[in-house]
Image (cartoon, rainbow, N blue to C red):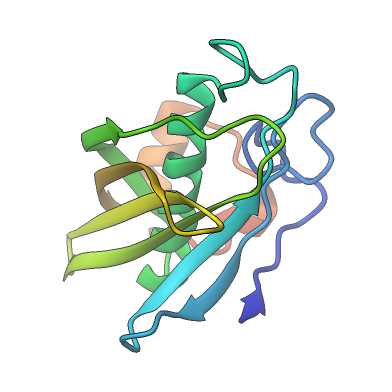
Length: 161
């Protein structure tokens, strides 16, 4: 497993290492038992991240799956991608507060203009919690500039014109 670099100036709520209220997820690249590359994170829902008592908030669970999918597209897809949106999100059981869980994602379709990523969350004992499939397309500097999104310099260097 290799820990993925995440600059301290990353402003993201989900993965920004210094975000004051964020999840501060950190990611690593690895290979699963079948030899397939994946990205994963281990997270422990906090007491103030609940929806129903003792259960991780549904929206934050979605965010963990989405962030893991993004880092998978970025890392395994080899460039900056933007989400076209989730195709499917399913929560079999919500993660429990105070209990470690693992989110992992893999690219299941790789085409020049599209990636499809599948992400799963499980307890550390392997019980399934949720899954998401999402689609991603390559980002371009022209589109980002036209939208007026002030991306940090470390991401701008990744963009094609």
